Image (cartoon, rainbow, N blue to C red; front, side, top):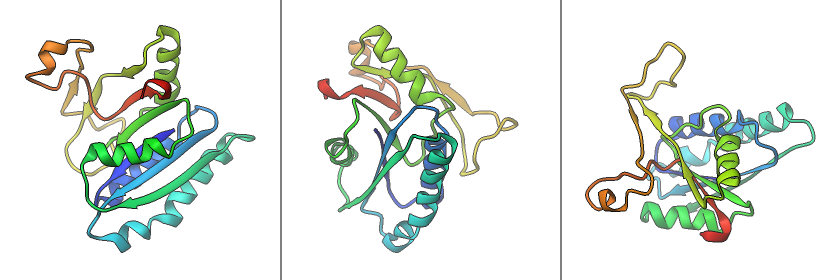
Length: 174
Protein backbone atom coordinates (compact mmCIF):
# COMPACT_ATOMS: atom_id res chain seq x y z
CA UNK A 1 0.00 0.00 0.00
CA UNK A 2 1.27 3.46 -0.86
CA UNK A 3 -0.12 6.11 1.50
CA UNK A 4 0.15 9.72 0.32
CA UNK A 5 -0.78 12.63 2.57
CA UNK A 6 -1.66 15.79 0.66
CA UNK A 7 -2.38 19.34 1.72
CA UNK A 8 -3.38 22.00 -0.78
CA UNK A 9 -0.83 21.22 -3.51
CA UNK A 10 -2.83 19.63 -6.32
CA UNK A 11 -0.10 19.83 -8.98
CA UNK A 12 2.45 18.16 -6.70
CA UNK A 13 -0.07 15.49 -5.69
CA UNK A 14 -0.60 14.59 -9.35
CA UNK A 15 3.17 14.27 -9.83
CA UNK A 16 3.39 11.99 -6.78
CA UNK A 17 0.51 9.82 -8.01
CA UNK A 18 2.07 9.61 -11.48
CA UNK A 19 5.34 8.38 -9.95
CA UNK A 20 3.40 5.67 -8.09
CA UNK A 21 1.48 4.68 -11.22
CA UNK A 22 4.81 4.12 -13.00
CA UNK A 23 6.01 1.52 -10.46
CA UNK A 24 6.59 -2.10 -11.44
CA UNK A 25 5.39 -3.66 -8.18
CA UNK A 26 2.36 -5.91 -8.74
CA UNK A 27 -1.11 -5.27 -7.32
CA UNK A 28 -0.63 -2.09 -5.34
CA UNK A 29 -3.04 -0.10 -3.25
CA UNK A 30 -2.95 3.70 -3.31
CA UNK A 31 -4.46 5.62 -0.40
CA UNK A 32 -4.59 9.40 -0.62
CA UNK A 33 -5.48 11.46 2.44
CA UNK A 34 -6.35 15.12 1.88
CA UNK A 35 -5.25 16.60 5.19
CA UNK A 36 -7.71 19.49 5.42
CA UNK A 37 -6.82 21.42 2.27
CA UNK A 38 -8.60 24.79 2.30
CA UNK A 39 -9.13 24.55 -1.47
CA UNK A 40 -11.24 21.42 -1.03
CA UNK A 41 -13.04 21.71 -4.37
CA UNK A 42 -9.75 21.99 -6.26
CA UNK A 43 -8.38 18.90 -4.53
CA UNK A 44 -11.59 16.94 -5.15
CA UNK A 45 -11.56 17.96 -8.80
CA UNK A 46 -8.39 15.89 -9.25
CA UNK A 47 -10.46 12.72 -9.04
CA UNK A 48 -10.65 12.05 -12.79
CA UNK A 49 -6.95 12.75 -13.34
CA UNK A 50 -5.95 10.53 -10.43
CA UNK A 51 -8.24 7.76 -11.65
CA UNK A 52 -6.69 8.03 -15.12
CA UNK A 53 -3.18 7.65 -13.65
CA UNK A 54 -4.29 4.63 -11.63
CA UNK A 55 -5.82 3.12 -14.78
CA UNK A 56 -2.50 3.66 -16.61
CA UNK A 57 -0.87 1.38 -14.00
CA UNK A 58 -3.39 -1.38 -14.77
CA UNK A 59 -2.97 -0.84 -18.52
CA UNK A 60 0.82 -1.20 -18.19
CA UNK A 61 0.49 -4.34 -16.03
CA UNK A 62 -2.11 -6.67 -17.59
CA UNK A 63 -3.77 -8.82 -14.95
CA UNK A 64 -2.71 -6.49 -12.15
CA UNK A 65 -4.54 -3.59 -10.58
CA UNK A 66 -4.08 -0.65 -8.28
CA UNK A 67 -6.83 -0.18 -5.73
CA UNK A 68 -7.52 3.51 -5.07
CA UNK A 69 -8.92 4.96 -1.84
CA UNK A 70 -9.31 8.70 -1.32
CA UNK A 71 -10.31 10.28 1.98
CA UNK A 72 -10.38 13.68 3.59
CA UNK A 73 -9.62 14.64 7.17
CA UNK A 74 -9.91 17.89 9.03
CA UNK A 75 -6.48 19.51 9.31
CA UNK A 76 -4.49 17.37 11.71
CA UNK A 77 -0.91 16.35 12.33
CA UNK A 78 0.99 14.61 9.57
CA UNK A 79 1.33 11.54 11.80
CA UNK A 80 -2.42 11.34 12.40
CA UNK A 81 -3.14 11.63 8.66
CA UNK A 82 -0.58 8.91 7.90
CA UNK A 83 -2.08 6.68 10.59
CA UNK A 84 -5.54 7.12 9.09
CA UNK A 85 -4.21 5.95 5.73
CA UNK A 86 -2.27 3.07 7.27
CA UNK A 87 -5.25 1.80 9.27
CA UNK A 88 -7.34 1.59 6.10
CA UNK A 89 -4.65 -0.20 4.08
CA UNK A 90 -4.61 -3.89 3.22
CA UNK A 91 -1.00 -4.35 2.13
CA UNK A 92 1.74 -6.37 3.78
CA UNK A 93 4.01 -3.35 3.43
CA UNK A 94 3.21 0.36 3.54
CA UNK A 95 5.17 3.03 1.70
CA UNK A 96 4.50 6.47 3.14
CA UNK A 97 4.84 9.50 0.89
CA UNK A 98 3.88 13.15 1.03
CA UNK A 99 2.42 15.06 -1.88
CA UNK A 100 5.80 16.68 -2.56
CA UNK A 101 7.61 13.30 -2.79
CA UNK A 102 8.20 11.30 -5.93
CA UNK A 103 8.85 7.58 -6.06
CA UNK A 104 11.89 6.76 -8.18
CA UNK A 105 11.40 4.08 -10.83
CA UNK A 106 11.35 0.64 -9.16
CA UNK A 107 11.30 2.27 -5.69
CA UNK A 108 8.49 0.15 -4.29
CA UNK A 109 9.90 -3.17 -5.53
CA UNK A 110 13.44 -2.24 -4.43
CA UNK A 111 12.44 -1.19 -0.90
CA UNK A 112 10.16 -4.20 -0.40
CA UNK A 113 12.88 -6.53 -1.70
CA UNK A 114 15.35 -4.93 0.74
CA UNK A 115 12.89 -5.43 3.61
CA UNK A 116 12.27 -9.07 2.68
CA UNK A 117 15.94 -9.94 2.12
CA UNK A 118 17.20 -8.26 5.30
CA UNK A 119 14.20 -9.08 7.48
CA UNK A 120 14.03 -5.36 8.31
CA UNK A 121 10.73 -3.96 9.52
CA UNK A 122 11.53 -0.45 8.29
CA UNK A 123 13.46 0.48 5.12
CA UNK A 124 14.26 3.87 3.64
CA UNK A 125 16.82 5.19 1.19
CA UNK A 126 18.76 8.26 0.22
CA UNK A 127 16.65 10.91 -1.45
CA UNK A 128 17.32 13.82 -3.75
CA UNK A 129 15.68 17.16 -3.20
CA UNK A 130 14.80 19.87 -5.69
CA UNK A 131 13.53 23.43 -5.64
CA UNK A 132 10.39 24.58 -7.39
CA UNK A 133 7.36 22.69 -8.61
CA UNK A 134 8.69 21.45 -11.96
CA UNK A 135 8.85 17.71 -12.38
CA UNK A 136 12.50 16.65 -12.15
CA UNK A 137 13.86 15.31 -15.41
CA UNK A 138 17.12 13.89 -16.65
CA UNK A 139 18.44 17.41 -17.28
CA UNK A 140 17.34 18.82 -13.91
CA UNK A 141 19.93 18.24 -11.20
CA UNK A 142 18.95 17.93 -7.55
CA UNK A 143 19.91 20.67 -5.08
CA UNK A 144 21.19 18.01 -2.72
CA UNK A 145 20.92 14.45 -1.48
CA UNK A 146 19.84 13.32 1.98
CA UNK A 147 21.58 10.20 3.28
CA UNK A 148 19.83 8.87 6.39
CA UNK A 149 22.08 7.28 9.01
CA UNK A 150 19.79 4.41 9.86
CA UNK A 151 19.93 3.21 13.44
CA UNK A 152 21.87 6.18 14.81
CA UNK A 153 19.40 6.70 17.65
CA UNK A 154 21.55 9.16 19.60
CA UNK A 155 21.99 11.39 16.55
CA UNK A 156 18.22 11.28 16.02
CA UNK A 157 17.73 13.18 19.27
CA UNK A 158 19.37 16.25 17.70
CA UNK A 159 18.63 15.91 14.00
CA UNK A 160 16.47 13.85 11.67
CA UNK A 161 18.89 11.04 10.85
CA UNK A 162 16.31 8.47 9.85
CA UNK A 163 15.16 9.60 6.42
CA UNK A 164 12.28 11.32 4.71
CA UNK A 165 8.62 10.43 4.36
CA UNK A 166 9.43 7.79 1.73
CA UNK A 167 9.78 4.82 4.04
CA UNK A 168 8.51 1.26 3.80
CA UNK A 169 7.15 -0.31 6.96
CA UNK A 170 6.16 -3.92 7.36
CA UNK A 171 2.54 -3.92 8.53
CA UNK A 172 2.83 -6.48 11.31
CA UNK A 173 5.31 -4.27 13.18
CA UNK A 174 3.28 -1.08 12.71
